[in-house]
Amino acid sequence: MESIDKLLAELQAEHQNADSNQPEKPQSKPPAKPPQPSPQNRQKNDYNIDKLLSDVQGEAEGKTPQAQPQPKPIASPSTQSVYGSPVESLLGDVKQEFEERLKAEEIERKERERERERQREERKRQQQEKLKARAQEWLKNLDPYSDEGFWFVQFAEKYSSKLEAAIAYLNAMNSENHP
Image 1 (cartoon, rainbow, N blue to C red):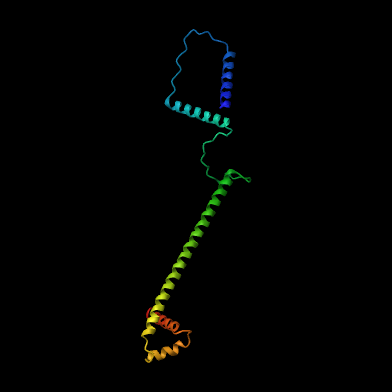
Image 2: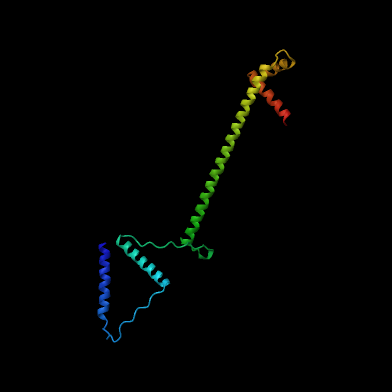
């Protein structure tokens, strides 16, 4: 705050010096009333005063005045230079953002693909469990002395267990019925 007061005192001293250097005019007429500013000019002046005040306060606090964000110009090929221009920087930022978006989309695509694969595996596992339960039930109901029973005993010799053979047999029967 001391620096603001100091700055204000300097401005007042300069203003007084400027007034004292001018020769005094005889006042034959009373000073005219200053013209009233229009509302638009008043708002403009208020804005300028506020901006100047914030600049002075920023300087007093050791900060640089904050500039209003300017819209970025649209890049055109004619404005590009060989050196690192703002346009090239902007283009680099856009390119980087685009590449990041592509990477994110690729990651999402891979995650969806893994999820679909996991769901396929889960369905396949559930189907295998259902088929296993059907095979166990089929084996329980199989008459070993029937023609089908004799045939199945010979068929099962090629498998490590009768259950595995029954699963293969029922699976083959299902694929025959549902081509």
